[in-house]
Amino acid sequence: MSDTTNLEIVTPSMVLVSEPVDMVVIPGSDGQIGALPRHSKVMSTLERGVIDIYNDNKFTSRIMIDGGIAEINETSVVILAERAEKIDKANKQMLEERLLAFKSQENHEDKSVSDLANKNSSFIKAVLENIG
Image (cartoon, rainbow, N blue to C red; front, top):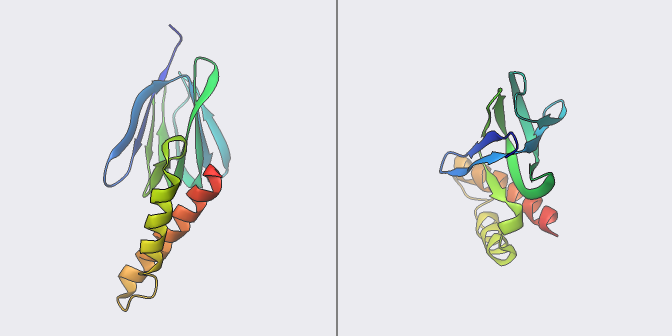
């Protein structure tokens, strides 16, 4: 068995991923960060972008995040993100329906509702662009 690092991707509503991986590449604010087992300790802010997950020396999964923070150490990578979506398991039709629902709230009279709808719409558009 090869060395692995434990990857956790957490949003306010759920733990999206909690699994051992060979390597993970994350969208750091200063560029891509590749994390392998026994990585030195790093804390980084994250940009909106795609997380690439590798197992058995091959690419296995992609997850879109909407920024966040990452803590990397010798045994784990923990990512806290406001929004995240598994690109390879995303249902395009459901995402398009969610996008329409968010767009209908973008001009809501309550500014907090309209701001959240704009952020969610923007994220769903980015996910749809990445799933083709």
